[in-house]
Picture 1 (cartoon, helix red, strand yellow):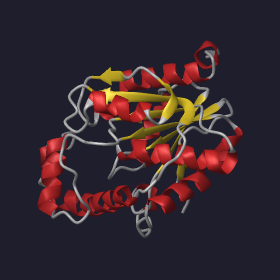
Picture 2: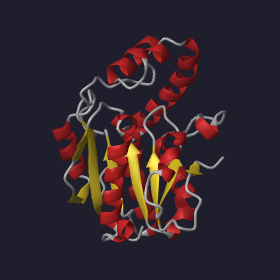
Picture 3: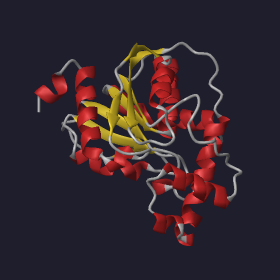
Length: 253
């Protein structure tokens, strides 16, 4: 099944925001963004197999295969300019996708927005896909953002933990090697109370990935501030998308 979910189905779309969810998440996290962003900015999202609209499919066969599948899936959208938005693990895959699009088509997205992502040294100990259920639950609890009643629900955990393990496996499989920095702007979004990401380290990490570093933006909330404070995040996204096209997006609403 196709990895792409298109949430904006309108002739008014002039550029696409392609979203990549955090580990354990799926494309539905971004469904309501289509009605909350400027009309000209269409919203689409990518999801790995085994969750959301791809439930029942075999897990992704490593990071390279996942990014290749994503690049295939977004090809129909490339007739219009695109921006990439990734949250946590999704930001890392968005970076790899930007490089894959450059390699295939000779051009990059207009911009990449990396939320809640530190590439080198997360504050919390790295969790491995082979971790026990108990260790995974404790890690989720430390991250915040998941209600305690869900973390004690056997039914919820039976659905989430296999997906999370699969995603951790994809992340652990990454081996991008040396590559030239992107030439598109890279925007870093940070949660002010994120227990996993050090803001200065994240800014440094992502600055090394681009020749066009942008000032970071901070938002109230923890590692899942994208959902916790969606209003300010979407306002920032609209501004950064508008800047990517020289102010033509918001002015034409």
